[in-house]
Length: 372
Image (cartoon, rainbow, N blue to C red; front, side, top):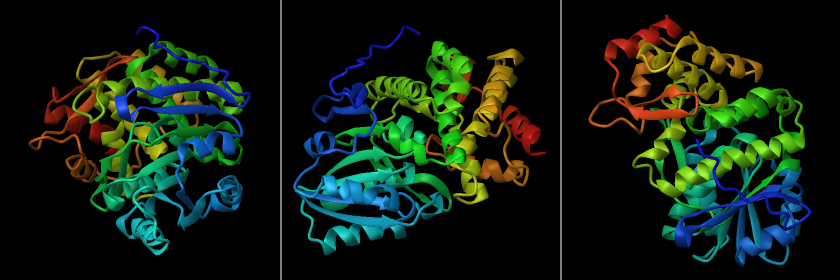
């Protein structure tokens, strides 16, 4: 793959990298750096009324600092329970109630201060409150910084399927603050690495090779290595989203491993497996399908297994699920069309495709191999 254009702008001593999502009038910046919760970076991206949406874990760490920066504006906060199991319409109502109680108008801004769950729910609230208001992403997990905060997908879960209720609604800006990651648990950090590795799998073999060479530095939380991984991941996603904002084609590649992974999350009960953990196992299953259908060889599969193992991530789904249970959740995936499951399969590391070119027997063989 040809190297994508990037702009490592040193416009501020705190900004390490800067790029943008090119969507015409809906274009927005992604700033990657340290200590970005400042007036310099927050105030230009918000309006007169700001509702900070955060959760019980993040609020004690960063809410007071954020509200202090926003003190010149009308800023309020709503604190949600923490966990994927709370990514629901019931929890979303807490955001609507806060907005309505405080008389927030159509010119307000929602500021998502949290991980992927907070970002998805704040974004969906912004998409639907008074038929659409502004929002800004301040992702506090590695997974959110490299994936869910970028691209405008917003959603809540349903017991029968993940992210089945939502909307496309682009933020006004994304501030990926590396210093916030210092308070992230090891488990959450490693879960974020799954989405980073995904970008190498789907579209950039050089980035995959870089990850093989630098996974130890990432696990040691070397700030320069993390910043580069976030930048490259965001560049790849920005490139894909700009070409296919509403997922009519190429954007579906971003779901490599997700059809299997979302089934794991739903089947095990949201929150029991972290999203990145489920996606890691899902990518291995997708690689197995890719080999089973003659697209790749065993050496390619082993490279994937080895890198995910080194990252401390699961390389198999939970054996408490049965093949029938997993398939039952897979057929509710958003990519299913006319009853046909679509998968993202690999033709090589850095080259993937969305396809229905596999048999029910081949899919069943993969499910049986991993789930018995």
